[in-house]
Length: 211
Image (cartoon, rainbow, N blue to C red; front, side, top):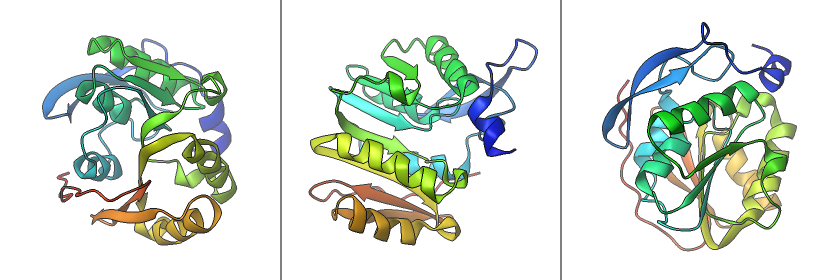
């Protein structure tokens, strides 16, 4: 799938959408997915590593999922923090439509799925969880991180999952040089790194995802 197709995908038709059973926040749920987005048939391994490696999110404030796809990270944030406002950001209209459908399907009224430019400039985030779109290219990825990491609150923390052989370690070094030095490796499992960006330290549960 080319990057151009990813950026311009339109919402899936009824015939294109299908139900998939996944496990989110310790429960089995059905979600809608479709072709033309990342990992449409399952909960991908990188996201599994991320969700098994992050601490509980803040229960209030604004929480952010960058590159939401069909919504697994944003939905998990909303399930774990029903009193917070969850922002699910993507440039793919198909992904945003699916995230909205899945939030409604699970009764999650605290999810806003929107394009990056539709997030108000004054919103800052108490937590950022993301399986960022590495394959869009280094320049696009760096612009994405330059946009969102500075929008953490003073005590806000980001967790990013990146495949080791796609440059997780070099990305950690770049973040430390170009954005902020408080970036550490919070977990490593199944060929993925989880990078933590933010003040302080935190005990992170071990990540041992299953296929």
